[in-house]
Image 1 (spheres, rainbow, N blue to C red):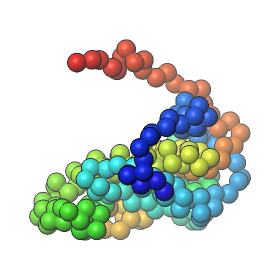
Image 2 (cartoon, helix red, strand yellow):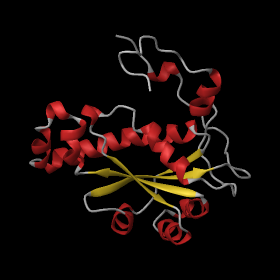
Image 3 (cartoon, rainbow, N blue to C red):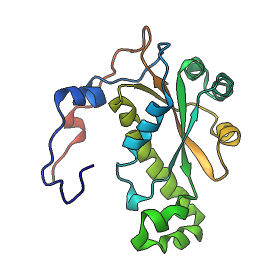
Image 4 (cartoon, rainbow, N blue to C red):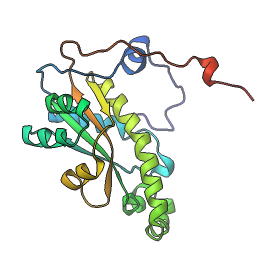
Length: 204
């Protein structure tokens, strides 16, 4: 891995990589029978973990659901339009926010280790930091899925309390469910329009 001191020149990624991550990639709706390996699922995090969070908080936690029983149970907590996709995906990731992320701060933010006690004394502040940064990391997670030649189907539309109770450790709450696999027949819907730069960008 290139260190900060060595990274004197930044290079843009090529057109194929931009298409894979952004311009051609779309949410997947059906899946081929091609399996997704444990190594591929591990590699997703190996990419996503390097992207920035506020003060390196890293509150996102990933629970992979792969067994038929687990996926059927998870599907039962999804909204009706998401149930079939969740049950059929080769792997499903539950992305959650860990409200106790600050326990790791002495390791991942050693020069501000005292923040562990600050967050421990202020649960509302910890919850807000966990949620906001987990959403940020969820975006990185989707891009990491795509970077590895897999397709992602990120979904809202679920009973978060039920998923939390069934699948997650105490102190974590679900922010997103992501189906992962290879595209099957009719996997892609037509791309919906995106806002133009004139609708989004202004200059000061």
